[in-house]
Length: 328
Image 1 (spheres, rainbow, N blue to C red):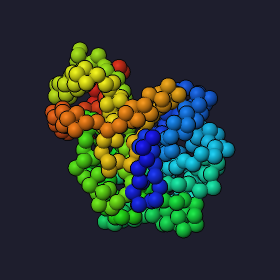
Image 2: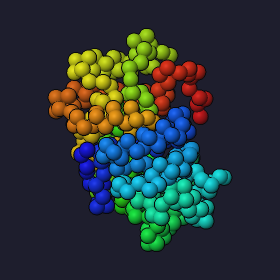
Image 3: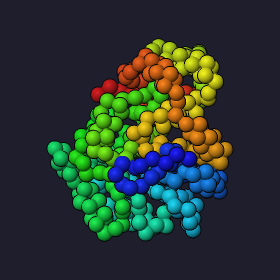
């Protein structure tokens, strides 16, 4: 599998990485199947694995699966959400969180430790100073790095415009951006990716299948749904027509589109079984898309350049959806 530099870390990572959320109990497949999927990833050349304390029992599952594995791999985890009640400005609790991660992952050193959701103060209020984005977590990361407990630092965020100023501090080695860089959702192109390139940090893309919206075809695209706006529906119809023309599956197209950008170090799959791992690996091993395909996909993406107002953050294909929450 193709390897790319992870920013200026000196690490080379596979263009396809493993996201740890769905090997946890969230994936619903059981630990034995999850561990088989993890081992198959390594066998097929995947060497980057991402997890977090907030991903249920993901760290524990990974620790058990990777114990005794001699093949080199890179693991990233995060600060945020543990222990509960979580206080992002309590350095003692942040220390306890990384100690727990080391124990669960059965590691002495964490390759990359990220600040989880640094761009959503309503979720985790990390910063004392929003002019320079400094807080107790900044001090903890510096201490852990100097002590050799972590090798590199990172940011794991999901916003398109709050994350770039934090990247621009130049204090981090890697950025993981999720939900804003995929076939039809491209807002990371405006500020997140340019900021990351200026700082020469490694770029990890989460949710290339857009929380399942690009995992398969859905009947709502043809039948309509209350929550599905006309522009978005027409966009999906154009995408499905394009798939028929090129005879490539939707998830393969979505993965290959992300890796067609040479600035992306790795993109994370949410595979929960050997079969899903093998399909995703086969997709990226087919390589980047042609220039003509990329141009046609740009036209389709431009049909809805920004999220329609009150579009559900995770499109509820195949699920009940009552409607938007109250306005504030």
